Length: 119
Image (cartoon, rainbow, N blue to C red):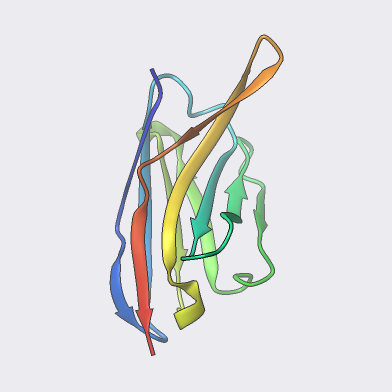
């Protein structure tokens, strides 16, 4: 059974910083790509950042230069450091990973953590 548990969300003023954490369990971490998504009210869920098992990273254009994704395999934890936050970053942030079971992709999601950025 795979579990992803996020933490670290909250209310912050524009220009501030937050660090999100996601702890994974269920033998799914060290060889897996880990990702952060977000979903704002009335909008589709979107990819924010992802990190491969080799540490390679990708970011959405809207967060490049402000957000940093990292992982600590020994702790089965992935982080999202968010700096220079803007009101448009307000959303529920979700941790995500996936694996293929009999060639079918199965996604796993955390419960989400709310990030609210006030102007």
